Length: 88
Length: 180
Image 1 (spheres, rainbow over the protein chains, first blue to last red):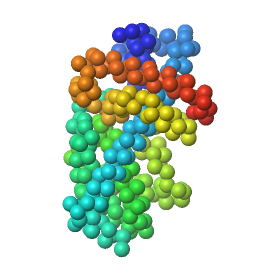
Image 2 (image 1 turned 90 degrees about the vertical axis):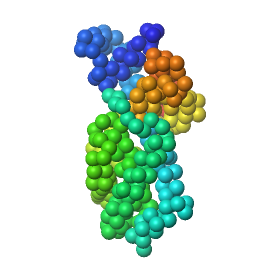
Image 3 (image 1 turned 60 degrees about the vertical axis):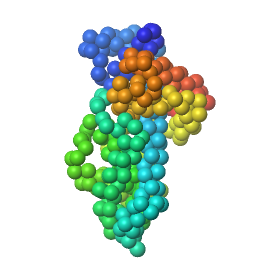
Image 4 (image 1 turned 135 degrees about the horizontal axis):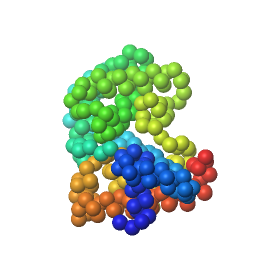
Protein backbone atom coordinates (compact mmCIF):
# COMPACT_ATOMS: atom_id res chain seq x y z
CA UNK A 1 0.00 0.00 0.00
CA UNK A 2 1.42 3.41 -0.92
CA UNK A 3 2.65 5.76 1.80
CA UNK A 4 -0.28 8.18 1.72
CA UNK A 5 -2.76 5.30 2.10
CA UNK A 6 -0.76 3.87 4.94
CA UNK A 7 -0.92 7.26 6.64
CA UNK A 8 -4.72 7.20 6.30
CA UNK A 9 -4.75 3.76 7.92
CA UNK A 10 -2.61 5.02 10.82
CA UNK A 11 -4.84 8.08 11.26
CA UNK A 12 -7.91 5.81 11.38
CA UNK A 13 -6.23 3.66 14.03
CA UNK A 14 -5.45 6.84 15.97
CA UNK A 15 -9.05 8.12 15.69
CA UNK A 16 -10.59 4.78 16.68
CA UNK A 17 -7.81 3.90 19.11
CA UNK A 18 -7.49 0.41 17.66
CA UNK A 19 -3.89 0.27 16.47
CA UNK A 20 -1.01 -1.73 17.89
CA UNK A 21 0.42 -0.02 21.02
CA UNK A 22 3.84 0.44 19.40
CA UNK A 23 2.29 2.06 16.30
CA UNK A 24 0.14 4.30 18.49
CA UNK A 25 3.18 5.53 20.44
CA UNK A 26 5.06 6.21 17.24
CA UNK A 27 2.07 8.03 15.78
CA UNK A 28 1.79 10.24 18.88
CA UNK A 29 5.45 11.19 18.48
CA UNK A 30 4.91 11.97 14.79
CA UNK A 31 1.97 14.20 15.71
CA UNK A 32 4.23 16.30 17.92
CA UNK A 33 6.90 16.59 15.26
CA UNK A 34 4.64 17.15 12.23
CA UNK A 35 1.93 19.83 12.49
CA UNK A 36 0.74 18.84 9.01
CA UNK A 37 -0.16 15.39 10.31
CA UNK A 38 -2.34 16.87 13.05
CA UNK A 39 -4.15 18.84 10.35
CA UNK A 40 -4.71 15.64 8.35
CA UNK A 41 -6.21 14.02 11.46
CA UNK A 42 -8.66 16.90 11.70
CA UNK A 43 -9.71 16.57 8.04
CA UNK A 44 -10.09 12.83 8.38
CA UNK A 45 -12.35 13.32 11.43
CA UNK A 46 -14.46 15.67 9.33
CA UNK A 47 -14.60 13.01 6.60
CA UNK A 48 -15.86 10.49 9.16
CA UNK A 49 -18.52 12.95 10.33
CA UNK A 50 -19.72 13.42 6.74
CA UNK A 51 -19.80 9.63 6.19
CA UNK A 52 -21.98 9.22 9.30
CA UNK A 53 -24.22 12.02 8.03
CA UNK A 54 -24.46 10.23 4.67
CA UNK A 55 -25.21 6.89 6.36
CA UNK A 56 -28.01 8.40 8.43
CA UNK A 57 -29.51 10.16 5.44
CA UNK A 58 -29.54 6.93 3.41
CA UNK A 59 -30.91 4.94 6.33
CA UNK A 60 -33.65 7.50 6.85
CA UNK A 61 -34.66 7.03 3.20
CA UNK A 62 -34.73 3.25 3.63
CA UNK A 63 -36.89 3.57 6.76
CA UNK A 64 -39.23 5.99 4.99
CA UNK A 65 -39.76 3.44 2.21
CA UNK A 66 -40.59 0.79 4.82
CA UNK A 67 -43.10 3.20 6.37
CA UNK A 68 -44.68 3.80 2.95
CA UNK A 69 -44.98 0.07 2.38
CA UNK A 70 -46.66 -0.42 5.74
CA UNK A 71 -49.05 2.50 5.42
CA UNK A 72 -49.70 2.77 1.68
CA UNK A 73 -50.18 -0.82 0.53
CA UNK A 74 -53.09 -3.22 1.13
CA UNK A 75 -50.70 -5.85 2.50
CA UNK A 76 -50.63 -4.33 6.00
CA UNK A 77 -54.18 -2.97 6.23
CA UNK A 78 -54.90 -4.36 9.71
CA UNK A 79 -51.68 -2.97 11.11
CA UNK A 80 -52.33 0.41 9.52
CA UNK A 81 -55.88 0.64 10.91
CA UNK A 82 -54.68 -0.36 14.36
CA UNK A 83 -52.19 2.53 14.37
CA UNK A 84 -54.44 5.15 12.77
CA UNK A 85 -57.23 4.36 15.27
CA UNK A 86 -54.93 5.59 18.03
CA UNK A 87 -55.03 9.10 16.61
CA UNK A 88 -58.79 9.46 16.03
CA UNK B 1 -14.81 -1.59 15.75
CA UNK B 2 -16.45 -3.75 13.12
CA UNK B 3 -18.50 -6.75 14.05
CA UNK B 4 -20.13 -9.43 12.00
CA UNK B 5 -23.72 -8.45 11.37
CA UNK B 6 -26.63 -9.77 9.38
CA UNK B 7 -27.72 -6.50 7.82
CA UNK B 8 -25.26 -6.46 4.99
CA UNK B 9 -27.80 -5.57 2.36
CA UNK B 10 -30.62 -3.09 2.00
CA UNK B 11 -33.05 -6.02 1.72
CA UNK B 12 -32.00 -7.43 5.07
CA UNK B 13 -32.28 -4.00 6.64
CA UNK B 14 -35.73 -3.54 5.15
CA UNK B 15 -36.87 -6.83 6.68
CA UNK B 16 -35.40 -5.78 10.01
CA UNK B 17 -37.24 -2.45 9.95
CA UNK B 18 -40.57 -4.03 8.99
CA UNK B 19 -40.15 -6.46 11.87
CA UNK B 20 -39.27 -3.65 14.29
CA UNK B 21 -42.17 -1.50 13.05
CA UNK B 22 -44.65 -4.31 13.66
CA UNK B 23 -43.13 -5.15 17.00
CA UNK B 24 -42.64 -1.70 18.53
CA UNK B 25 -44.47 1.03 16.62
CA UNK B 26 -47.96 0.30 18.04
CA UNK B 27 -46.74 0.88 21.61
CA UNK B 28 -44.76 3.99 20.64
CA UNK B 29 -47.69 5.41 18.67
CA UNK B 30 -49.99 4.77 21.63
CA UNK B 31 -47.60 6.62 23.93
CA UNK B 32 -47.22 9.62 21.59
CA UNK B 33 -50.99 9.73 21.11
CA UNK B 34 -51.54 9.77 24.89
CA UNK B 35 -49.09 12.65 25.14
CA UNK B 36 -51.08 14.66 22.61
CA UNK B 37 -48.90 14.00 19.61
CA UNK B 38 -50.18 13.25 16.13
CA UNK B 39 -49.43 10.44 13.69
CA UNK B 40 -46.69 12.36 11.87
CA UNK B 41 -44.93 13.18 15.12
CA UNK B 42 -45.11 9.53 16.16
CA UNK B 43 -43.67 8.54 12.78
CA UNK B 44 -40.78 11.06 13.05
CA UNK B 45 -39.94 10.05 16.62
CA UNK B 46 -40.07 6.34 15.83
CA UNK B 47 -37.97 6.65 12.68
CA UNK B 48 -35.25 8.51 14.57
CA UNK B 49 -35.44 5.88 17.31
CA UNK B 50 -34.90 3.21 14.63
CA UNK B 51 -31.76 4.99 13.47
CA UNK B 52 -30.41 5.12 17.03
CA UNK B 53 -31.30 1.45 17.46
CA UNK B 54 -29.61 0.45 14.18
CA UNK B 55 -26.42 2.31 15.07
CA UNK B 56 -26.27 0.64 18.48
CA UNK B 57 -26.90 -2.72 16.84
CA UNK B 58 -24.17 -2.47 14.20
CA UNK B 59 -21.57 -1.07 16.57
CA UNK B 60 -22.19 -3.93 18.97
CA UNK B 61 -23.66 -1.92 21.88
CA UNK B 62 -26.80 -4.05 21.85
CA UNK B 63 -27.87 -7.42 20.46
CA UNK B 64 -30.85 -8.35 18.39
CA UNK B 65 -33.62 -10.11 20.35
CA UNK B 66 -32.82 -8.21 23.52
CA UNK B 67 -36.28 -6.70 24.06
CA UNK B 68 -36.43 -4.38 21.06
CA UNK B 69 -39.83 -3.03 22.03
CA UNK B 70 -38.65 -1.73 25.40
CA UNK B 71 -35.48 -0.33 23.89
CA UNK B 72 -37.28 1.51 21.09
CA UNK B 73 -39.91 2.76 23.53
CA UNK B 74 -37.17 4.09 25.82
CA UNK B 75 -35.47 5.96 22.99
CA UNK B 76 -38.80 7.29 21.71
CA UNK B 77 -39.78 8.58 25.15
CA UNK B 78 -36.43 10.31 25.44
CA UNK B 79 -36.81 11.91 22.00
CA UNK B 80 -40.38 12.99 22.72
CA UNK B 81 -39.42 14.46 26.07
CA UNK B 82 -36.54 16.35 24.52
CA UNK B 83 -38.75 17.69 21.79
CA UNK B 84 -41.44 18.72 24.23
CA UNK B 85 -39.01 20.45 26.58
CA UNK B 86 -37.20 22.32 23.88
CA UNK B 87 -40.47 23.34 22.25
CA UNK B 88 -38.76 23.90 18.96
CA UNK B 89 -39.36 22.75 15.44
CA UNK B 90 -38.26 19.17 15.33
CA UNK B 91 -34.85 18.66 13.80
CA UNK B 92 -34.01 15.09 12.85
CA UNK B 93 -30.36 14.01 13.24
CA UNK B 94 -29.62 16.72 15.78
CA UNK B 95 -31.50 15.52 18.77
CA UNK B 96 -29.05 14.91 21.51
CA UNK B 97 -25.45 13.90 21.79
CA UNK B 98 -26.45 11.52 24.59
CA UNK B 99 -28.51 9.51 22.11
CA UNK B 100 -26.80 9.84 18.76
CA UNK B 101 -23.16 9.19 18.04
CA UNK B 102 -21.27 12.42 18.44
CA UNK B 103 -20.87 14.45 15.30
CA UNK B 104 -17.78 16.49 14.67
CA UNK B 105 -18.91 20.11 14.46
CA UNK B 106 -21.33 19.65 11.60
CA UNK B 107 -22.64 22.92 10.24
CA UNK B 108 -25.26 23.88 7.65
CA UNK B 109 -22.46 23.79 5.09
CA UNK B 110 -21.98 20.09 5.74
CA UNK B 111 -25.27 19.58 3.86
CA UNK B 112 -23.86 21.36 0.81
CA UNK B 113 -20.65 19.41 1.09
CA UNK B 114 -22.53 16.15 1.40
CA UNK B 115 -24.60 17.00 -1.66
CA UNK B 116 -21.40 17.70 -3.59
CA UNK B 117 -19.85 14.41 -2.46
CA UNK B 118 -23.02 12.49 -3.35
CA UNK B 119 -23.03 13.87 -6.85
CA UNK B 120 -19.31 13.52 -7.53
CA UNK B 121 -18.33 10.43 -5.58
CA UNK B 122 -21.35 8.27 -4.91
CA UNK B 123 -19.53 4.95 -5.17
CA UNK B 124 -16.85 6.00 -2.71
CA UNK B 125 -19.48 7.29 -0.30
CA UNK B 126 -21.29 3.96 -0.53
CA UNK B 127 -18.11 1.99 0.16
CA UNK B 128 -17.18 4.24 3.07
CA UNK B 129 -20.70 4.00 4.45
CA UNK B 130 -20.46 0.20 4.35
CA UNK B 131 -17.15 0.26 6.23
CA UNK B 132 -17.65 3.04 8.74
CA UNK B 133 -21.40 3.40 9.25
CA UNK B 134 -22.85 -0.06 8.67
CA UNK B 135 -19.75 -1.87 9.96
CA UNK B 136 -20.16 -4.58 7.37
CA UNK B 137 -17.51 -7.33 7.41
CA UNK B 138 -14.79 -6.58 4.86
CA UNK B 139 -15.38 -9.94 3.14
CA UNK B 140 -18.99 -8.90 2.51
CA UNK B 141 -17.92 -5.48 1.24
CA UNK B 142 -15.48 -7.11 -1.20
CA UNK B 143 -18.25 -9.40 -2.46
CA UNK B 144 -20.95 -6.73 -2.77
CA UNK B 145 -18.75 -4.08 -4.40
CA UNK B 146 -17.03 -6.58 -6.68
CA UNK B 147 -13.46 -6.60 -5.37
CA UNK B 148 -11.24 -9.62 -5.77
CA UNK B 149 -10.62 -9.97 -2.07
CA UNK B 150 -10.23 -8.40 1.34
CA UNK B 151 -6.97 -6.68 0.50
CA UNK B 152 -8.22 -4.88 -2.61
CA UNK B 153 -11.40 -3.81 -0.79
CA UNK B 154 -9.30 -2.44 2.07
CA UNK B 155 -7.01 -0.54 -0.30
CA UNK B 156 -10.09 0.89 -2.00
CA UNK B 157 -11.43 2.02 1.37
CA UNK B 158 -8.28 4.05 1.99
CA UNK B 159 -8.24 5.40 -1.57
CA UNK B 160 -11.83 6.56 -1.10
CA UNK B 161 -11.05 8.09 2.27
CA UNK B 162 -8.16 9.98 0.69
CA UNK B 163 -10.40 11.22 -2.12
CA UNK B 164 -13.20 12.30 0.20
CA UNK B 165 -10.82 13.92 2.68
CA UNK B 166 -9.08 15.92 -0.04
CA UNK B 167 -12.43 16.96 -1.54
CA UNK B 168 -13.63 18.14 1.86
CA UNK B 169 -10.43 20.11 2.31
CA UNK B 170 -10.77 21.78 -1.10
CA UNK B 171 -14.50 22.48 -0.88
CA UNK B 172 -14.27 23.79 2.67
CA UNK B 173 -12.66 26.93 1.28
CA UNK B 174 -15.96 27.52 -0.50
CA UNK B 175 -18.08 26.57 2.53
CA UNK B 176 -16.33 28.61 5.17
CA UNK B 177 -18.42 27.70 8.21
CA UNK B 178 -17.53 24.04 7.77
CA UNK B 179 -13.97 24.69 8.94
CA UNK B 180 -14.90 26.66 12.06
